[in-house]
Length: 74
Image 1 (cartoon, rainbow, N blue to C red):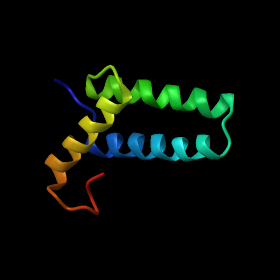
Image 2 (cartoon, rainbow, N blue to C red):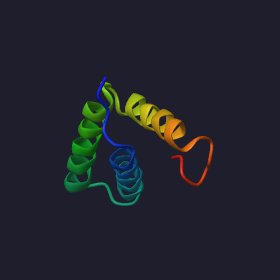
Image 3 (spheres, helix red, strand yellow):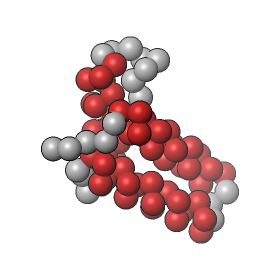
Image 4 (cartoon, rainbow, N blue to C red):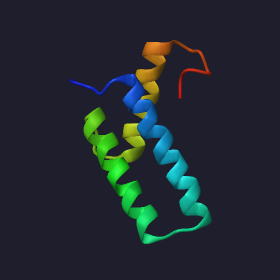
């Protein structure tokens, strides 16, 4: 399976986490729409259908690339 570059995956996962935090503080249509867009991109980039599965795939991929370094792995 083709998977996005680890740096791209990391950036997407970080953006999704940031949007989750924003949504918890101030939910609105713009935040929800961007979350949907990022979730979709994460799923396509990891070959999954669920954002939680996509985030787990990102964590696994980053662990493969960076080993168990908690600073570098998501």
